[in-house]
Length: 282
Image (cartoon, rainbow, N blue to C red; front, side, top):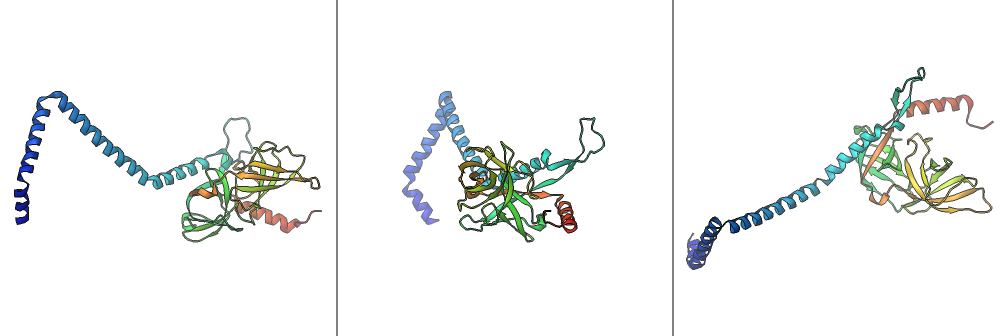
């Protein structure tokens, strides 16, 4: 306390000056409208800037939550797309309404690990069987093909992406509707290959490649990539095509998982056919 009094005693002239300045300013602002308005405007601007910065900081800190909400909304919207339903009305055809049975359902997940520089890359997601995730679910990002789930634990799942030497799936050239086989032979996380495309097919740089719908993992017409190079070897009967992938694997953070609600029925039926008639061509 002695130190406080000593400090006040030493600075009493300066403190008195400050007090008189405050009193003088109050009298000026109280008696003169222009000065009072100027002070209020300046104070309002200062307070407004503080609130603006606080709102920006709050919004920045909520980006993760906002991303989660957007991913969930996207999943709900994708689930309502017409491609996710099949028509089960086999009796009446003279009305505008249709009876639809849902085939695909969407789930959201965050990427917690993602490799890019290996021959066999994998993506780890933060959802497992406790969240309804199972293997053989397709994985997409912003609507574009990413891969499919191959392993699931209680709280996590692992997906095989396009960027894996064993990944293959049927794709279609959007313009010509011809089928090809998607593979990853380049080692580049931005570029993949489309093989088995006959030379009579019309294909050009810039063409869009989409899912064919023949895979049990993915609905048809999901974006896969865009043609960047077409190689025509004279001694071969097919094109070798490179595409720039639609999914940005270097930036993966949120993905959606596609649940095929009829996959078990399809697999059982195909297995029964193979057991009854075999798999060899006759």
